[in-house]
Length: 177
Image (cartoon, rainbow, N blue to C red; front, top):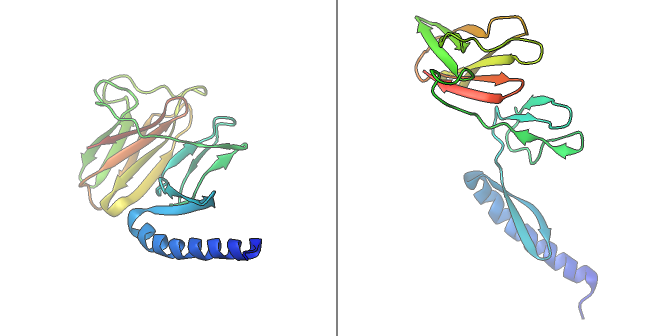
């Protein structure tokens, strides 16, 4: 005769056995077991990566993920939205960061190169500009309303550069050299 305890223990053992298998695979597949409900295992793909940017739709808070693999980011009682990097040709979209290289000095501007600098008012401005360079190294400069939408960085390697900027109204934008 089976008791509730013995059935439960059997399911837990089965789950742990499967969990061991999935834990080995999860390191390679970037998945994890979220829970066991109704004898079904729910597998969650870890979509959060280091340097992902999230925004709260309630209070407007913007955060960056420094610890990849966090299951969910909550603010004001709701899941935060992952800010997808938007891209376009910098000649036609004022939000795309434009990279200019002079030796080891890299300048990133938003709209200046196309003749129309991005607005930098209290209501609409670029919060920060970030440069990603050799081996995923990051440098970031925070901007303020009234300042020029531009940042200059000194780096040792100027190959494979990528720039990101965050507009308080239009989100995350990226551009490459």
